[in-house]
Length: 257
Length: 112
Image 1: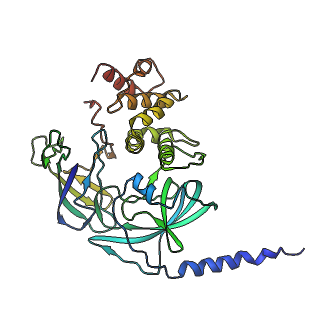
Image 2: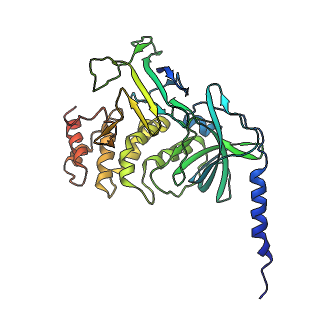
Image 3: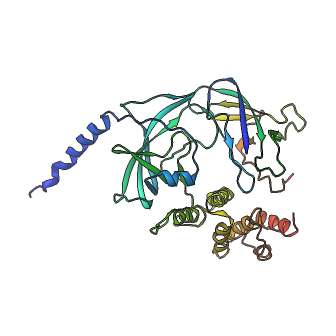
């Protein structure tokens, strides 16, 4: 039985990968500043959604350890790509770099990347490498609504609306309890990027969800300030599959409290 | 706009003296972490300012509610001790019966 021609390619690739991972990194100047979703989206060459496979501290190369009083560490993230929101990327995986702070922290969200979690990553090219739009501070958007099939988007507004949908609407493999726990945070984020009218449209679509817990929470987030649409409350009060806490809150809201 | 001032007693702190823009609901998120360095002890105060000209004021102190000491001595100030694996805020590690409890949504009634 003859060996296939690519029999030796596996070990060869392993040697090359080992060599490449030890090669000095080009100079990556840290950019530690907070950046909101809209600015990240505008600055990024490539915006992708997917799942973090691993995160390791990058070895070798030029690695400044401080930016002001902030101790920094260069991290390399391997990422499985599920869809592209901005830019072009054909492969199913990519690697990128970012600096994280290793010291004490109090302020805007730090960059936290956890293997196995799903994120939108906002990336720029730096030489031949991909890196996060900003360092130390959050440069991603975690998506806790599960896996989604992404449609092509053509402009900034469509990209923001897509991100709002990914934040709020359930996808495949949704963890309902985690989703409900942080739902008000996702609503706040959606309000900040697409405004109250479009956020309300997304929340109203959830009033038809088959899960009563989701219908109930969506109704509460519609009725709360600043959207203040209380039309769903009467239905919520009679929906026994909604949570008792949401029905109680619905009663208070319907009484103007 | 909210300004955060941190006064560090021991240790080092990145990302301090931050400025936050509140959301349309008047909310902002402030993250506290010890990181992988030494323990940190610091105190926090917040001031709010309004540059819109409508009901404008400058550097109004923000009340920080401490349920365990409603009349002080930390009224208006957060004392934070960030240790390995746990953070104490005004002496509380955020646990009830040994388990972490989530912050109560300020809009929701608190069950006594």
